[in-house]
Length: 276
Image (cartoon, rainbow, N blue to C red; front, side, top):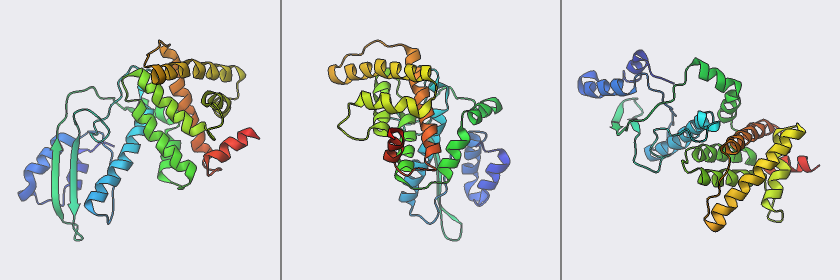
């Protein structure tokens, strides 16, 4: 969410204003009305707390990426200012406080290194769009983890999908998207990869015969692009609309698996149900 001035005052009220006035002022200037993600790690050593925070916040941000305009328009850049997610120069802002048992801060650090970039404005209209496309399903899934093999696989898929959407090289993105599809839909090494994808992918996300045929066409076309890049180092031309549809189909499959995770505990159980 975004911090209002009053909320930020309350968050920092435990700091002695005489000793930390400059810090409070700087924090308000930089974080007021800025969308952030937070995670509270209780009774955890500070290094472990940082690791947990980065892991859970990464997943939350990757959900936002999955619902970003990049899903429909592959050339739209999709980055968030979390330096532990990016390979380039860090441009994140971090505000961390280490508590004692008496709720007094032992350490308070504020780090900034933001570069200019265009922000995605998530207004009421865009929130309605995300809700319509299933944001609530992601929220409920992540807030109520079952800890099954399938659920853990879905979380990995969210992280990898979000990371893939931040890849500017679209040929490399296609490779990454197929990697995700493969570990979701392959039962073993005895079935050709493309055959397995064309068997399970369409059935999972559509009941329409024509749409299933279109899914198979796109899988075949883009898999050729993927194989050419991996095996021969050749970047074949492809239709941008096909990539847009592929991203949407993968998004649809992810939503379907989240729904199925309420019934099934493993990926193999899901695929075996299709086989039957």
